[in-house]
Each structure stands twice: as structure tokens, then as C-alpha cells.
Image 1: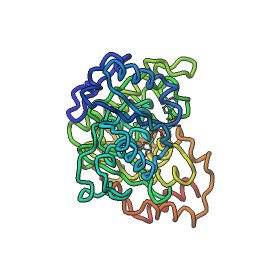
Image 2: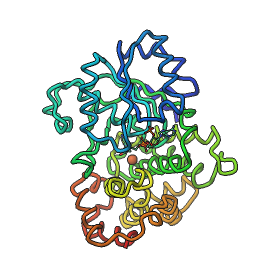
Image 3: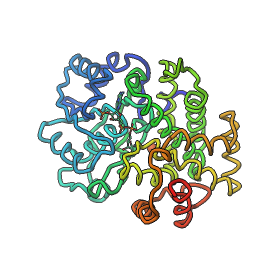
Image 4: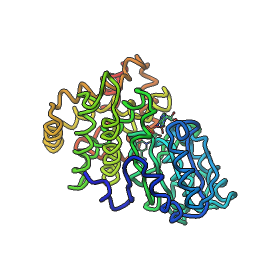
Length: 375
Ligand code: NAP
Ligand code: FE
């Protein structure tokens, strides 16, 4: 699939792309706020490349290098204040989905001085477009570089809420698989499972289009091949070829969900990420078996799942078993008492994702899913 054809974001791929394209940085602005987590942007080499490109382009920058996993909205609000105080006119986000989502929110807060933390989600209160954004993923998972969503943690860590807007698309996304080389096995698998979940949930969505389906099928095929068949791995290690396939697949899955949104594994996954610190991809993948099983009960769902499984060269049953198993979440968490399971479901009540698949899940069925996995 040709990622450069994506209409919403100019996607630039390949080794050395950041250094080779320094001119694009000065076309985004004169002074950048570089948003990242604490370590990975430096560790993977992306920050050094960005510093070099900015230097060559004559663009100054300051750093906001403190974004944790599951970025809290209040911290992004502070980042917006810093961008204004420092006179930054664009944002460069380097990292996984957490840093890129935070970069989008910071770009929104920076352009809207009167926005309170909660106002970012309200189109009537957030009146100005986000500052321009350049996204540089260092994980191969969320596809945030290709979509307009920014998933933020609110209510003191109790909930997640998505800010989405057409001005939150990155102006440029540099997808350079070499930056994912430093990712440990745990995160390589977890982020790949996130991208696989995106492709499955997008493919089954009633909002899917021929374009989103093409992206979803491509992404799922690549990820299945590398993660479940071990293609392009050597002695259990991911080769650069494998990392390239996963990075481009994750980006394509981001394009797919930009059309459709995600399904119920996502909100259900948020609850165990926030309470049990399970990485996002694993947390979604543990519910993917239930998602496929319920959707097999509807003819539209069954037909699509059969097509998807055939494309992967597997069966629906194998997907239903292997995806949650690969997440390792059940073993890690063990039993959750019923009262707590119900509280976890209440936390993520009302999400639009529940109606975004052929089978619409009920509250009682959510309890059944939790009981089967964690009972
Ligand atoms: P992440 O939370 O961004 O990062 C996870 C960990 O991996 C961090 O400790 C990070 O370190 C580290 N890391 C990142 N790149 C690395 C590298 N190249 N080498 C070594 N370590 C590296 O993980 P993610 O799975 O990419 O993002 C998850 C977030 O994205 C969640 O908040 C989720 O809700 C959101 N999400 C957004 C979308 C969307 O459409 N926008 C879709 C799905 C998920 P540092 O802290 O040092 O950077
Ligand atoms: Fe996700």
C-alpha cells in the first residue's frame, strides 16, 4: 500500500527521512515545541535527527519531554501554556501514541488561550485550529501520526476521552522504522496488537469504506505474518524488514480507523490500562476474541470475518484464540472480583465504540465477557 497517497497527512517514509527533509520543518514554522516522553525520543535517535534537521533549517526549538504513557489532559494544557510562553508556532511530537496524542492536544491548547483543560473536547469552546503538527512515531502501533484523534486521560486518571478535529492531523508524518529498533519485545508485540485491533475493528465497522478496508486488510496481513507467523524474525528477534512491515502496517491501520473509529475492545481495554497498567495494545487484544465471537453471530459480521481470516491465511477460530492469548493479559491479571469488574465496565459506559460493529453489545454481555476472562 502506498502511504504517500494518504490525503489527510503528508506521510514520508524510509530511513533517514527526517534529516533528508529539513526544508519541510521550516515550512511548518519558525520555533518548535518538541513534545516527547522522557527517554525514547533520545534513545532511538529521532531527537538527534530532528535537532540536526532544525539546525539546518534555521528553526529554533524548546523541549517538553515529560509525557507519560496515557497522557493526562492537564499536562497537555501546561504544554500549551509553555508553547505560548516560549513563542512556539508549531509542535513536533516524537514518540509513541502517548507523545503524539499529547502533541496534538498541546497544539490545540496552545492555539486556544481561553480553553480550560476540559474545553479541548468542546468544538464550541475550542475556537481556533491547532498549531501545525509534525509527528514522528517511534512505536509501530497507534497510527496516531495518520489520524485526527488524540486520546487523553481525564478525571485524575479515572477515564480516557478522545479529542478529535480536522486541524489535529499532522502536517507531516515521518514514519522511519529505524526508530522502533530500540523498542523492547514487550512493546513491539503490544503495539503490533494495537494496530491489529485497529485493522480488525475498522474492517468490521459499519462506517468502513473501500479505502479503509484496503488499509485494514493490508495492515492485518502484515501484522499477522510477522507477529503470529514469525516472518522476518531471526531467533525470535525482529529484523529491520519486520520492523518496517510493522511500522507501515500500523500507519495504514491508523488511516483505516481515521475513517471508521474503533470498536468495543478499545473502551473495555482502557479500563484495565488505567487500573492495572496493562499496555494499551495488550489491553485491547484481550477483548478481541470476544469481539470476533459476538460479531460472528451477525451475517454481515460473519461474512467480513471469514474474508479477513482468508486474507490472513487463517480461520476465525484461530484468530479468536490466538490474539487474546498473545496479549498475555489473562495470566498477568488473574481473577478480578465481580464488584470490581462491574466498576471497570461502568467507567467506560456510554462510549460510541459500542455501536460501531455489526453486533451491538449489551451491558449484560460486557459483564459476561469480563466474567469469562477474569472470573
Ligand atoms: P506509548 O505509551 O507512547 O509508549 C510506551 C512506552 O514505550 C513508553 O515507556 C515509551 O518511552 C516507550 N517507547 C516508545 N518508543 C520507544 C522506542 N523506540 N524505543 C524504546 N522505548 C520506546 O505507547 P503506544 O502504544 O505507542 O501509545 C499508547 C497510547 O496511544 C495510549 O494512550 C493510547 O490510548 C493511545 N492511542 C491513540 C490512538 C490514536 O488514534 N490517536 C490509537 C490507539 C492508541 P518514553 O516514555 O520514554 O517515550
Ligand atoms: Fe488503539
